[in-house]
Length: 433
Image 1 (cartoon, rainbow, N blue to C red):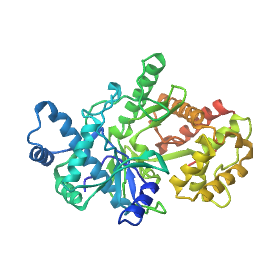
Image 2 (cartoon, rainbow, N blue to C red):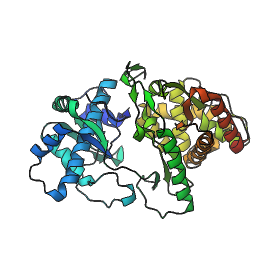
Image 3 (cartoon, rainbow, N blue to C red):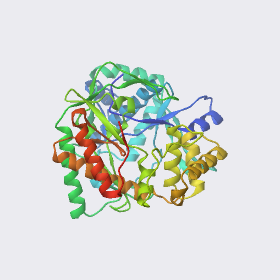
Image 4 (cartoon, helix red, strand yellow):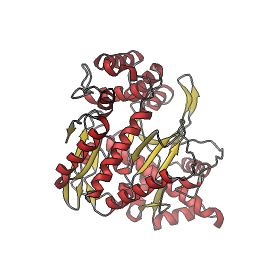
């Protein structure tokens, strides 16, 4: 199988339940993030496209071919995640034949959503995808997106194509400053001094990351329940596109603002193997950052570990905390916890109550959509840390609440994180490595 661009999948509890209830299906299903900015390229793919789409006009050829290449890449990504987790993995994409105006500054390909869906349907008709159509219902009032699962025929096809194929981006550059609505829809904006400054900072930081070689050992298999990773013995280069980051805002440039990049999709075990120009790296984590920030924001010292809650492992407690703080109501929080962790309604409510009891001083922030403020604060902290490190020539990969850099610069990075955090919150952070 082709080594893909970095991908991340998650277990989809809604589709797992739906498939078990309405189809001849047992067990869990996963979905991988859809990538329409890149595709598979190679002589065998060129020949296959010419064979399957012989009558495409020259005007439509470029977009249709990119949609075809992107569809093959997403199938390959899903198959790769199926192998890694030993669970069926697909991707989510609407089947609606409805054109929607796309904003030019964000375009990272030359095809429409309608054309992409058409190519997916064609691949399904040829036996390479199983389509499970999305729907609205009692528990899915916002709609459940259609699920596309690769078939055994797709696996055979990708195995044949792998020898002469590579992953290529469709456009050389992508807009690094992203503004979305509360519903997650892209919004156009007028450039001003603020956006131009952010863009120039991002370019500086991205160029610094691209000036060195990052490599890692990919996970060949990950246990779907425990998360234990079984790593390859071979190092793979991350590539410049995977260490380029963008900032994403919601509604305005004072809400959200987090840094996003493909390198963040690596598992913790994979990140621990990253080397920079052949040298080891360290990842420094600000422990339970959002809980800590809320305590410090109120002028109170924070517990050593905000996710140490009786009756729950740390990863579960962290998900419960972040969902409950970021939701706008108890009902939506419980629903998100059910979906994310596979809890029953009673289990979700009990988990939220356990967090409330453990953190009474900041209980006022539950169901307050705190992410709007917290993500902006942590993104500005990440901005300060990266720029301060860049002044000393230190490239840093930000992972929201942690920062990865060369091990030889660990002490300097620790000092920078302490300085930038205390400057903003008045208390020292707790840093783990």
